[in-house]
Length: 317
Length: 94
Ligand code: SF4
Ligand code: SF4
Image (cartoon, rainbow over the protein chains, first blue to last red):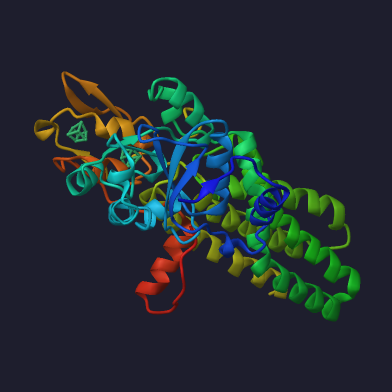
């Protein structure tokens, strides 16, 4: 039985920082299985989690000073919520892991504590039927686990409700930003070269800055300003952020540009920002697939039209 | 999360109240407070808050909740759509 420390070392913090910034994101796994925090006996609670290193670290550090069993499922280094959506944090894996670790021989009780965000993948009644273990959905956030345990294993309504606070959104900014680079860096380089070639270096530079700014508007500004940007639709929020940015850009660099070029640029920049904002739906905990589909049906034709008009204006009919 | 609301009247969530046995599982697993108990049975009280995660449907022991579950992620939906058209083969995002 591996004994784990609830103390995070420098390497763990470094690892989390690297994951946030998208460095080696896919190599953050812990071997699945049963772990002991402190010196748990047969009556100690069992907390089930994913083998995503960041989650695992959060769980073990929040349970410091307690005697607890930690059952880590094989989710291939993916967090609980995404793994539950995919089914790897699911009934099948939980049942298999309970059997493989011989949990019923280790324990005197028959209760498993699961994160609420794992519920889309796990059917509690089927786990009970297969293993005899009762599944309890403890809390949504790891941070609430200690209170849940101290509270006689009672979930308060607040522990059950999703939040998306400024701090939680800020934590996403680096990931969103770095993920956008995959496309943004080559596109910026292309823009710089083409602009340089057509109208000189400074034109290429202002063009690239405009483009990078639009991406920042759609990723960073929308993430941070989410509750204050009007509209329920993300494409709409991104459009507004993009309009604000292109307004600033026009004031800064628009002096020597013709009106059609300016209008074309505003349309294109707004589209870029809107597209990135729509992409952000995947990172938020309150969008439904039906809603996103509906947004895409209206937003994509509008974006395509805006881009076509922009190109026509730029070429100058 | 009272502050954020996504699009209205799109969620595919359905509940057959007649067959509900009142186990409260759906209330326990829903991250958005969509259900409430009334007269020993679950009711949908806030359908527009539903994100179609599928937790309620998967955990209802008598399968009386139904929802087209999936991830509310534009990136994943684009990739799924490209897959259907046979244009793209790759892993989805989240
Ligand atoms: S699908 Fe998810 S969000 Fe919608 S009601 Fe069920 S548990 Fe709640
Ligand atoms: S999970 Fe199903 S049976 Fe249980 S309260 Fe909800 S609807 Fe009723």
